[in-house]
Image 1 (cartoon, rainbow, N blue to C red):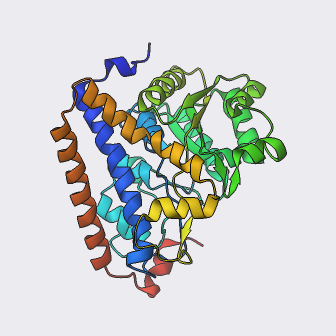
Image 2 (spheres, one colour):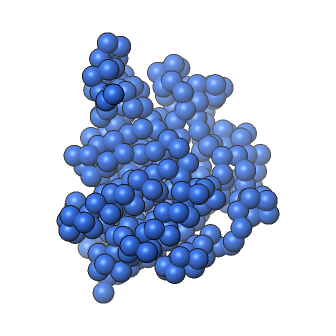
Length: 344
């Protein structure tokens, strides 16, 4: 049987909390860059604040060599996998010291050395890529499984249905994690249900392909760990894929961009309310923040003291302060080097 969150050690619980904080603080620094250093990030950056419990709960179940392949909202995954935060931020700033030497940027991160082959900038495309990687692992008998992360909007793409069908037929070692963050770009899920996406919960789409489908509270890191752990065990045993719908709330807009007006204080809250126009909804989501809930749990059960928590939080803030300084100091890549990293 798969290990459950009840079996997690104190060290693992603290690791999980720390990783959740690192994702949140990293994304806050990306967001602040648009205000504090205009023009440093060119184009969009799609942030994952709000998804921390879902990301960490899922990745806490993986073996060291398992592969992780998300969509373009992809900053948090490599952080958890061990990609140096300095190099990750430098890549988002499109600098020479980035993990892709500045030529990938926010949506096209890749760090194969940490089992992060690629992210995808096209909705739904990465689902098929993940199945391909799972097929390779199956044929080579590596024992690896693949974690495929994508948004709720991807569930109406042809690639989603075609890939789940093929993965089910071939019993591929892949866990499909549908991140339902309540918004498809700027369209609320309530409107999607009525006009665009059939089926509630979205996990029931798994029935069409005779594979398990389950919906989990994506703000509860332990529940995510338990459900993804069962799916991972099933994949490792050769029983095929599982579709997991992880529900949480996206705390930032669809994509921060250079066109966002400067907001000197309360940037996150102001921007989300401005974009969505749902102040009560946003306030409720903040109260249900997975990081806040997990912190309260760890202090309540004695895993952490208040002083321990503050020390971890201060350490994460200091780390990300250093990360930004490093990335800003990194040089831009030379234009003439661009063709060194493409194939004809």
